[in-house]
Length: 400
Image 1: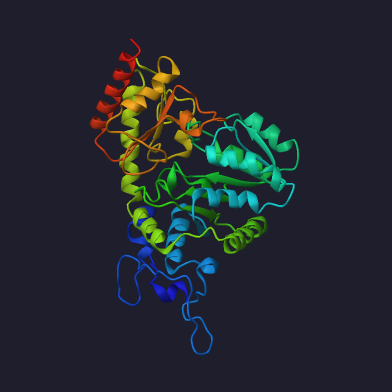
Image 2 (image 1 turned 180 degrees about the vertical axis):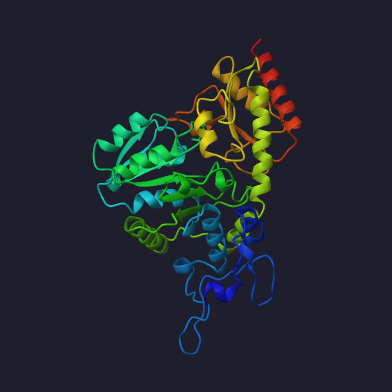
């Protein structure tokens, strides 16, 4: 059964927030249910003539019925041609590196999500990858690294976790394409609400769907999205990614797929409020006597503000980091003294989280020791400000 037989496609080219809210208008053909049904099946029966009535045979091969909707919706929100959902953001991101030919050279940021950095360090060389790390906000350094030898892939994360360094995505994309390299962009933090990497030259977009797309801290998921123009190079890597997922099995369960789609429906209003609150906190603490610096690209004083203003629209997302005055242990005590901010890892949920990233990452961490990372949720901005104020003051008093 094709997609068009399962739901009536919209004839109007609705805006992304409308597509997200209604999940592209999908309905259960059997009942007319507005939310998608949850089909808890790992295998699917053939009819008397040994045909597959629904086109599905086995969960690992094609996924569950809910896969088609969530993949189509995310592809549409990014303006891409197709999407693949994975069991985690790491499964999605590492898939790209795993399907590259042996001996491939890849250029990646010095600052990006620690888990991917760790995977590339531990497993990249064993898989024959030459991994070159560069400061992605230095275009001369990027150009030199990419042109030094044949490069298969350039990978960008902007703003970069956890320092929120901003990369000029379009400029790096031009460098990558001039060298004949594929260009991948991690769009987890900006989301399609604030950034459209395909408009900036990306070949592939990656998401940790665990974060803002789901938005409720109850699902681990990932996505890869293919650019709208399907070139030979893009087709080649996409088919390998599809085969990789089918054979290695980093599949999302049917219930998790349902929860993920439910979260995506509220993506736009969540992101708009979260981003506004994050900016309010950044502005409040920018000149605070107990804070030496606020890292947030929405601040005019931030080194990445000019570039971020060009490539992000409607806000700067909900992640910021505070560099706490005093010795670095004081920043840890700030996290310990918070009462409203929850001391937990991850980001992108409706609840605000605080993390002393250096302590979490452990040996090998490049996170500044004096920094606490904040993931802003949907609470009152005034309550969040008050909680951080008291945590900073208590931590400072403990030094006296």
